[in-house]
Amino acid sequence: MPSISHVAIGFAASRFNRKNSPTVWTPFGAAVVWSTISLLPDLDVVGSRFGIRYEDTWGHRGVTHSFAFAVVVALAVYLFGRLAKFRAVKMALIALAVVASHAMLDTFTDGGYGCALLWPFSDKRIFAPWTPIPVAPMGLAFLSAEGLRVAGVEIILSLPVLAYAFWPSGNRQKSR
Image (tube, rainbow, N blue to C red; front, side, top):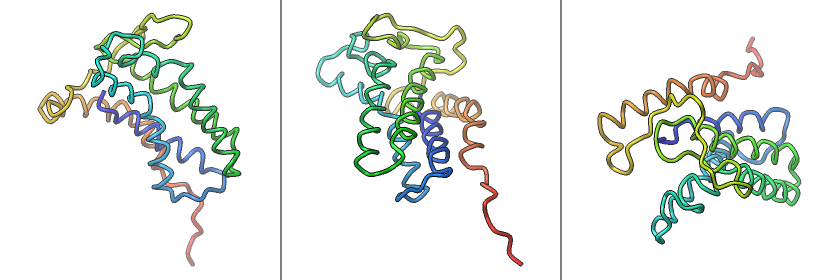
């Protein structure tokens, strides 16, 4: 997956968190933070540089694509929120949803080995019953006709989330 959907989820989370919550971040800065949190599960690709194979427990779509990992990230966000005097519980719940959504979205792709959603209870990789999202070509191969097709499919599938993220809020005062 070229991560368009993951970034869209981050944008939507930024808007949701901003609603009725004071923040020190600009809307753009908050969107970058939440999109980064949404992309955290893909840090597992670094393991391939150290000999960890895709299909290993710590390989791509393994541990970091589990609900347990989402809980760990949510706890870290909660602690950060407490220290920063933000609405820590709300932020942690949003982080939990954002990170868990990454793994869930990846189960809807048509390639790879699935995601270890239930790790540490099971190493079994899981796919959704329906896999409408094509897997993107890796690296520079993404800059191809196939990469463009995959990005187009993902943008179309992400439109509802993007609409929520960027729809005007209606809070603007009318000018006279």
